[in-house]
Image (cartoon, rainbow, N blue to C red; front, side, top):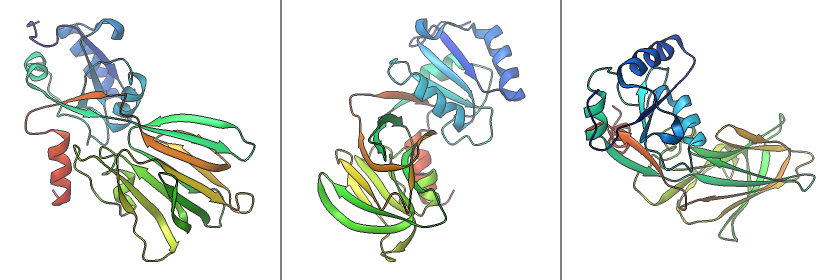
Length: 259
C-alpha cells in the first residue's frame, strides 16, 4: 500500500448489500482495515443511507469521511473505483457540514433530543391535516399553517426530502436553512422561507389531541409532539471528502440546472 501524505490508516464501513460487502472484502485486503478509533479517515461503502448512518455514528469523532457508491442512491458518495484509493484520498477536497439539533416535547411533557444531517420534519399522524404555529427567534411568524407538516433542512439536505416538498436548493456553503411546508392547505400561497443558519426555529402543534403530529430528525421519530425546537449546531463540524470536480457544492449547483 502506498503511504498517504494525509491519511495513512483507513477504516472501512459498509452497508449489507452484496456489492458493498464484496467491495469491503477486496479493499480491506488491499489497503488494510484499521479500527475506527485509530484511523485517519473513514471510507463508507454503500449509498446515501449508509453515509447518513456513518455521519451520525462518527459525528463527534473528528474523522474525515469519504464515501464510495455501492448502494442505491449515491448523491453523497464518490464514484466507486478500487484502484489508487490512496491517491484519491490524498487529492480529495473537504466539505464541512453541521447538523441540526431537534428538541421535541411530547404531549406528556417528556423531552427528546436528536441530531439531523438532512432535515427535521413534523408530520401529521392522522387523516387530518396538522395545524402548526411557527416562531423564528422567539417571534411568531406564522400563526397557523394547516398542512401535512413542515420541515427545516440544512444545505446538505436541501436536495433530499426538502426538494421533493418543493423547497429551495441551497448551496452547501451558504449560511442558510430552508423552512418548507409539506402539502400546505392554508395559507395556500405560502411556499416557505430561507432563514439564517443561526436562527432558532420553534414549531408548536395546535390542537395536538385532535390533530396529532410526529417529529423526525433524519431517522429518529418522536410521536405526539406538542412543540419542536430546531437549530444548527455549529460546535459540531463533520468533514466529508469528495473527488476534485465532484464536490457536494458542485453537485448541488448542478442539481439547480437539472443535470
